[in-house]
Length: 222
Ligand code: 5RP
Image (cartoon, rainbow, N blue to C red; front, side, top):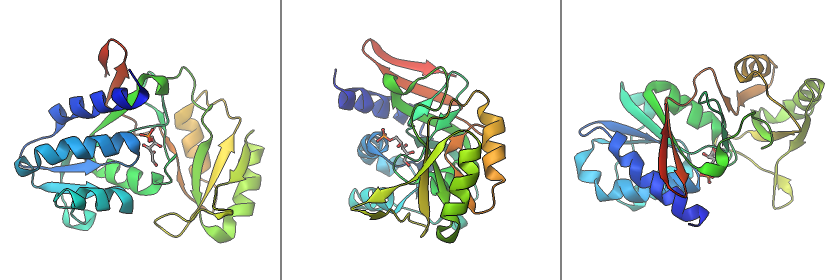
């Protein structure tokens, strides 16, 4: 199976977690895109969605799926999204698609986080994938110095030779070379750096369920 076929398989399996008549939180990235395509097939059974990025909102709307402003939503049984890395406890690195801030916000409102990923995303220790940190632009150099003191090497993410600008008007630092032995403690430490908007560690509130695409089928971790 190709990586895309594995992503498609978990996207299909995630439909089981969609609650009829309710609102679904929808993540960002290639796996989330497969999920959106599956959700389109049952769109008449849900009230609508909340999107974690402009790109996701556009894809949902292109399928005729209603997208609500989070401010108009009181409850959401489930948030479904991919990850760049996930460990056995459900702690994740996210933000490879630069959508980490809205992803964390939408996930915080949902009762359950269902992570969908191909099997290559499961790791023993988080950190091989460079950790994304969204920062206020005027603070990027100062924050990078603080992150480097924690043992990593922070690099400003570029797009077409210029700093990438997020949906929120901020920048992304990718922290290379971290071995994150205690994700909850590291998330808290980085959250305390002035100028940091969001750390791409989803550990304090990680995934409740992970659907992993493997050669021999979809494996569920809880
Ligand atoms: C976007 C994310 C994505 O969930 C993460 O990058 C995984 O993406 P993909 O499904 O394309 O492998 O956090 O900000």
